[in-house]
Amino acid sequence: MTEKTHFGYREVPRDEKSRLVGSVFDSVAARYDLMNDAMSLGIHRLWKRVALEYTGLRRGGQALDLASGTGDLAARMARIVGDTGLVVLSDINASMLSIGREKLDEQGIFNNVEYSLANAEDLPFESNRFDCVTIGFGLRNVTDKARALAEMARVVKPGGRVVILEFSKPTSPLVERVYDAYSFSALPVMGKLLANDADSYRYLAESIRMHPDQETLERMMLDNGFDHVDVHNLTFGVVAIHVGFTF
Image (cartoon, rainbow, N blue to C red):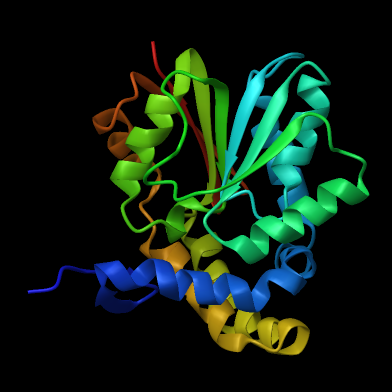
């Protein structure tokens, strides 16, 4: 029998998920930044700034930004590492990677960035290469999360860090109820109005609910190559940052 996985709340053949997720991001790529601002009331920018504080990056460092999308994290890391450093923007979706490249070009960020169209489950980089690996709001879309985590642990240097910024499980029952109501009513409506695509944003809400909670993701990281994991909740656990270390 064909192995199944989740695409939002739907069960789909495992080898179909990447195509389905790709179609979602092809659809929303042009309005991705606008929708992020609208959905989070701009708070996603603060979440990303906090995540950067955990990267440990310094001038001259090398970083890999997975599911880089429109390059928000990568642009900031490029400024941190400076001209002697390097940031690789990687995404499985060509439309998103192209928009990310255009965005960094417009900001004058050319000399210390590279681009890689790649699957997080099978990274085309040598082991122990990067001082830091980041993935912001992308892990929940990966089909085989355990394999992707193992790949992140493989390509980061011993003593380096992997920083995962992702939607998670609210720590307050009241916040969880409000968040659920907002996610399943407001997000599809905003998706329809701003991106002419309600279904993709319905998938977004569903994919968040299907993603492992804080403790489960921590255990997955420890089971797939990490020696220590710190977990930091933001906005009552609506978002969490997992920082993985290899020694």
